[in-house]
Image (tube, rainbow, N blue to C red; front, side, top):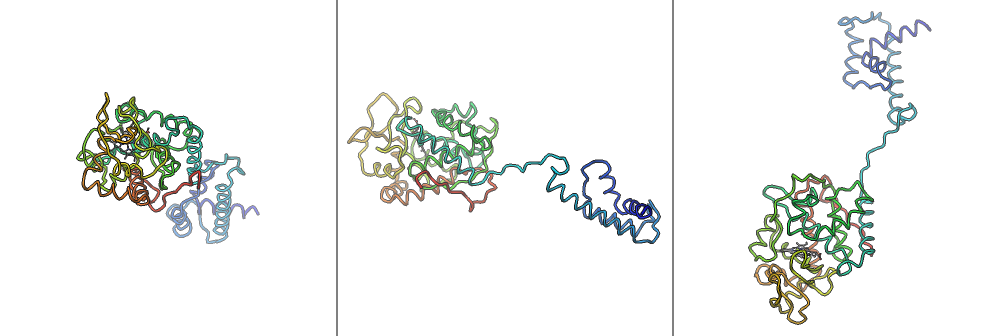
Length: 375
Ligand code: HEM
């Protein structure tokens, strides 16, 4: 027995020096890599001369013992990695990886808040949530690959204070309790999820979603002037949306978002809603543009249009461009006639808008579609 144990010790020393040192130095032993293992094994067996730590006497028993010890060690290591608590070590929790279900929970939380807080504006935070998601994304510049929804840089004073972003604090504050309840989501993913939820909950089309935006510091704030100016004409619209990579058809489809919400004198200086149902997504914006007569509103404010019949609805100068410009008008007429075509093009363009400049890991063909509260 004593000689067997001597042989075992010797075999251990000759055959697996790295195993030995690692296991004696620390209570957690480190398994040798395969190649190290192979080298040591070969050296002990074939070229004992080089180091001659022990004399190999030509008896294979030591090697068999060594191999046995290694196998036993590997088994113990296997158990250790699976059940470290058996060895007195704390169980290491696997990092939390959010999945579709986790994001659906956030969607549901936003939808619930939308329903609960129905005394805001025309009865919903939906429109201002959509405007937040759009203004977070619409700063994108394809040439420099800067801006876009990755970063949520509107949290910081320079960008949050840009005139175009006036009033969006209401949307950011609305989402804050959701961020507190689900702290693992980034602001940038949350703001876009807020926009997706708003569209769907206001009975708009499904907006497939990808997560993966990260929050960035204020050095990533974009310069003022990247969002559109409502007082300008078609060349401005094309310059702004062209910079993001959009064509005429997408520009018109995206403008259909003005079926929702209203202008506020204390935010943009303009006033009034575009449609009679500002908390329900429809193609009414296009219908009204094509079918109604519009005139300048006589008031002590910036130049805007009102409908001749009721004088209760409004259009911005940029809105009027999509019915005056020949190429834009083609799509305006199409969407006025065909709500399905509008919903499809709007969804496609908004997905693109919300993803501009974001380095996703989640592949394009694996976007998530959330259930809305009325599905
Ligand atoms: C030429 C392009 C655009 C211009 C000049 C423009 C301008 C404006 C202005 C001046 C307001 C009023 C803000 C306020 O006083 O509260 C507004 C509101 C809004 N915009 Fe746009 N916008 C444009 C494109 C878009 C796009 C592409 C979207 C979304 C895809 C969008 C969604 C909205 C929504 C939902 C509101 C209502 C917000 C609320 O009710 O609080 N807009 N927009």
